[in-house]
Amino acid sequence: MPADGPVAVLANPTAGRGRYRGLLPDLLERLSTAGRPVRLLAAGSADEAEAACQAAVAGGASALIAVGGDGTVHRAMQAVAGSSVPFGPVPAGTGNDFAVETGFPAEPRAAVEVIAAALRQGRSQPVDLARMTGADGTVRWYGAVLAAGFDAIVNERANRMRWPRGPRRYDLAILAELVRLRPRRYTLTLDGERVEVEAVLVAVGNGGSYGGGMQICPHADPTDGLLDVVVGGRFNRRTLIRVKPRIYAGTHITHPLVRTYRARTVTVAAAGITTYADGERSLPLPVTITATPAALHLLR
Image 1 (spheres, helix red, strand yellow):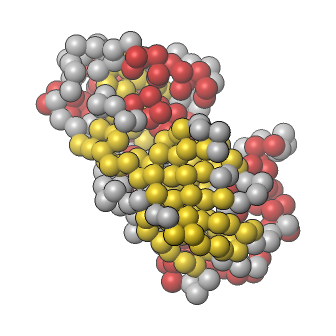
Image 2 (image 1 turned 60 degrees about the horizontal axis):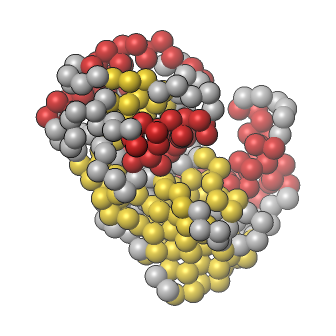
């Protein structure tokens, strides 16, 4: 691991509805105990945050740390995916699925202590990432789960709404989409094998959970070089409402309308759906997702 450059830190002050905002000075001080200069990156938007991370890595940062939730981690990891620059996610958001699932403590100060110790000892551990390629050749990476069904459609509606602010907007988006609920036709290509399905839920997991602990792909392992695909078929409204709470425990996969698959490369195609990766708006379908072993080196 290179040790001469600064440790770049991307922090999202609004993550977790701002409840960890006051912790940032303490987190930076704890990072500085690793004996390297610490540089806090400036960014006013998600796109600026991603660009700042790319610039920091290109400029010789010896490591990149993301303080925030899955969205912040997702933006930051675009700069280090496929490289040897090590990465440390500090869970400080509403959803911290990637950080927790890859073995970091859920408490931010404890996570920083793990990262600082890894920096001091020059230690990192590889994990897989999922590499997405869109129809236009755009490439993105994600660490946890790609949603391409009902959850993605709800997120897309919520992002278009200007009222109300906060969690209520998402709740209203769910109600609106439940009224319109219908199975969509998907074409899945799993390591070259084509499968046609009508489905309400489609998720492709490098990791198992999304949305703050919902085990949508409960058997996914971000070190096995494979993607887990979970398809919830022709659910009606009543069935979806009954099955949805079971996702927190991962027991939804035993429902007769749910199918699971495992593959190294997955193409998902359907009309009119924009995917959400690690909770962030991502590429429109069709997309091809490839499990990429050791694409990220975690400071733990």
